[in-house]
Amino acid sequence: MDTREVGVQTSGRRGVYDLTDACERFLSDVAAGRDGVLHVFVPHATAGVVVMELGSGSEDDLMASLDRLLPRDDRWRHRHGAAGHGADHVLPLMVPPAISLPVIGGELSLGTWQSVALVEPNAGKRFRQVRLSFLAG
Image (cartoon, rainbow, N blue to C red; front, side, top):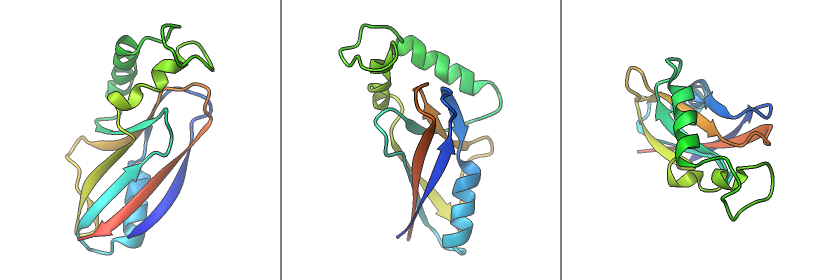
């Protein structure tokens, strides 16, 4: 298995950050025409990864939906940090910290409008690590 960590600069902004190019660069270095699985893992309690369409407004819709489902107020028992930070710790219920994706012929096998993205709900974080692992089949 080949593994690489990539950093994502969030500059303290909540939102959705495209990881697709980083995934493709990693695969071009390690997959060399092979089939297998790309595992994308975010080793943080308050961030996740998704496969979704980017650039069409879906990012704002995702964040607004999360805010409706996980209100950013003081109802949460986990209360350190900014108001609503407890909601960030419930995020894995809806946005998992890991996904596995097919790799065919060394290329990430996504649908036409699909991208891989980090979901950052926590305005207090400025930088995230993402671990990419390729397992040849």
